[in-house]
Amino acid sequence: MFRPINCLMMGAAVVIGEIIALGGLPEFYEAFLGASTAIFLMAGTMAINDYYDLEIDRINRPEKPLPSGVIKPPHAIILGFIACGLGLVAAASLNASSLLIALLALSLMLYYNTRGKRTGLLGNVIVSICIGLPFIYGGSAVGKVTFTLLLFSLISFTANLGREVTKGIVDVEGDRVGGVKTVAVQYGPKFASKIASTFYLTAVILSFVPLFFGLVGRRYIPLVLVSDIGFIVSTFSLLRRYSREDAERIKNMVLIWMSLGLLAFLAGSL
Image 1 (cartoon, rainbow, N blue to C red):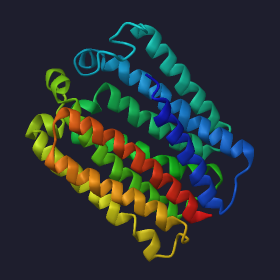
Image 2: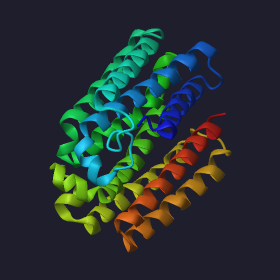
Image 3: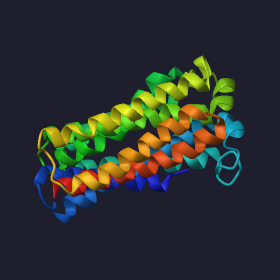
């Protein structure tokens, strides 16, 4: 329900954003509060998402805590709002701009959970904006938002947009029943695989821009190359096979490539 891997990635992205902005290590309280904001907001909004997606998950993900009966829906939403509250407290403990960004992210995700998901691609865009925000939030936490952070946010946004479209292929059956207008529901898995692949390849192209502008060091190159090769392999694999099982596998692999991208951002900025 809380998606621990996703939460940790969001927390790490904030700390990496702080390191990139400063060109060195942040103070402990800046790293702790920044990461806590992202982790708690991510965990909270994911729990709330599961509450609103209960009927869809009975079809797509019956093993999840809510549809399987492990956690009761009222408990999930209470835990979700408690986690979100803790995230906002952490943000407010940093500075006003950090709190504003946290409120923006929370507002976007609450809109997505209650209404935005059913809009399909717009919902995918909303989620991906929130995935790109941690870098900017990290810069804000230490009082320095740079062009490099904006660029890394754009790369993350684009890669995650491809992953969200891929998830639509995985969840097409339940989404169709739930009235969620994903690309896969409206135009079919084959077309959705092409759209997702376009975003993946765009992210690969964008990953070379920091090198072109001299914004990163040489240590960026090996990690980003492995990540890019992974994205390219996943792209062509998805174009060849776009069944639910294949899309599920690729969606999980893309999370690995995105994690390597995070490490590349960090290595290139030290």
